[in-house]
Length: 71
Image (cartoon, rainbow, N blue to C red; front, top):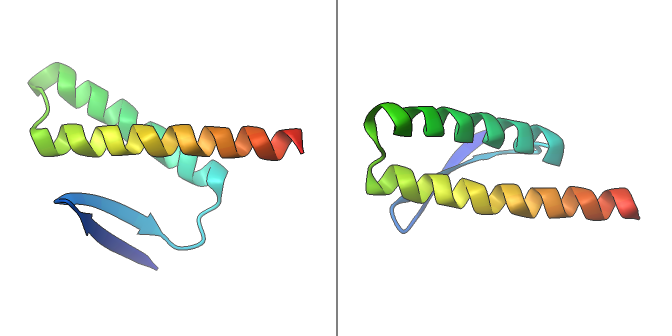
């Protein structure tokens, strides 16, 4: 099941029951593609906002995974 949440005109796709490692991998792939797109044509404000939101989520996931590994 997938859903879309519109937060301040920012579309964030939510995948039900996706584990942290899978989500991290998916987000990293999206970030890579966005960086490539930026090189060839730049990013709109909305695309930049989505990129920044994914970057924050990536940081959260990395911290979560690191904490889980230590415990």
